[in-house]
Each structure stands twice: as structure tokens, then as C-alpha cells.
Image (cartoon, rainbow, N blue to C red; front, side, top):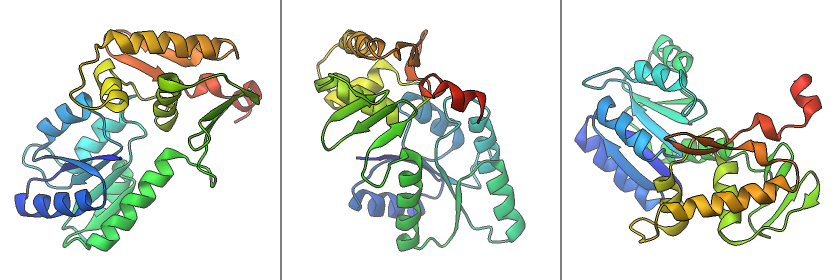
Length: 238
């Protein structure tokens, strides 16, 4: 289930959008200003951000520039909502780093289509639903992984961990976030359990010369580094 964060200070609009998107099968969190939105973003990074232009404590474009200036949210899909329909305002929002733009009053059918399109684009899914990043190919249906073209002996939580990382390369996941995604919210599994499965996944990657791709970010969590998975010739000749 894709997780969406909606930052919108108009409670009536927020309630309508949250109800509609939840009915489409998304998990939707709502914040009414940029400050609380930033806290929510860092506590549990969503798969997509829906952001209002005018917020009480900061403009939407200003918040986007702040997010794009860091490593964690550089690739986060962002859909901007605004009552400003003028072309120059659309351009300003897109130049700030928004991926798409929707004017109010919002058409829920158009919103649904744009959310779906942004999520498809961000997940980098091939037509056969495989996740392909550099020297790794993960097939979620067959639950198989190819590393450098060779099958990887992977199963269980290690497979699920790798799938999470491949869906969001370069994004840092805390232990709590990985626990939530793999075991479910409110589980009684200890956070150090994540470390055990990370260690096992790293050993599997090491067998294929890819252990350097799985990074420990001190005090924050773990991330899968995109550049470490790319063939050397593609890095030298992009």
C-alpha cells in the first residue's frame, strides 16, 4: 500500500482528498502546515507528497526547494495543489522542484490519474513489474533476484528488505520505518532484529560483489546507494 502525505491547511479540502484517496487504497496522512509536515516526512518518509502552495508558515515552493536541497527527499515525487492557475505560477512551482501541478478546485479523477502516474514513475517498474537498478533485478511476483545476471539465493525478510530499498534507492530508512514496512505498525519485534536481517542481506550482496551498495548511515539508518549498483562503464560514460 503506497503511503501519501498531504500538507494542506484547508481542513475541508484536506478531509475530502484524504477520504477519496483512502478509498483508492492509499494510506494517507495529513498535516496542516510545513513545520508539522517536515516532522512527518522525516519520521516516516511517504511514497508521494501532495503539497498546497499557500501554507500558514511557509510557501509550498519554498518547502520544495528545502526538500530538494537535501539527499533524503531529492527523488520524492511531489504533486503541488494551488488555486493559482496562471502559467507563471505553474512554471514557478515546477522550477522549484514539483513533479506535477494541479489547480483547485481539484478534480478527483484527475488527482487519481496523476497520483498513479507519479507513483509508477518513481517506482521505476519495468513492464513486467520487475525492479531493475543497475546490476540488480528483482521480480516481486516470482520472488527472485538476479545480481550481475546470476540468481541470488535470497528469501524471506531479506528479499522484502531489498525490495523496499530498490523501490527508493538513495533514501535513508530508519530501523523503525523498516520495522513498520516489513512487520507492520505496532509489532512487538525489536529494532535490532532489523540489524540482523541487514547483516544477512549484506552477506548475500557480498557474494556478488555488491555489499558496498548497502550503507549504514550513522544515527539515521540504512540506504541502498544507486551509484554502487551501476556498471562501471555506465558511471564513467553516463
